Length: 152
Image (cartoon, rainbow, N blue to C red; front, top):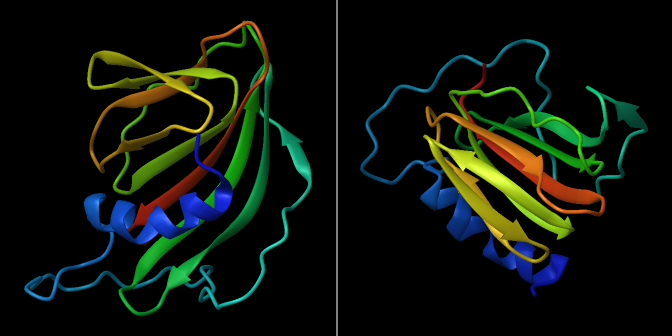
């Protein structure tokens, strides 16, 4: 199992795999950032208050902002799902998502296939892939989410 420090050292590689960091040969024109997105700055980010979502789901936001170097939207939060809670709605996005399971067992559905994830494992869904995540175990599921992509 990897700890949060090891996870942080893996982030640059995961972001590259997710297509979030443009390569030097990238010739795409960056999208204009929405006015409400503030630039992400270096420093320590403290979590916001825990908020209830759909039945059996809670979430705690860390930040949402814009990485100005590549005009990339970055969002981080930690979510919890109780045993038996319904999975999130099936979704597709313009951004990629990376999940780090901190507690419990998850099912990560990607394009018609269900994948089992346990504490210490990382799952990634690239932009445009159909997905959802659900608690697959008898105990609480907690996971840290990093979303990266174009301003939406």
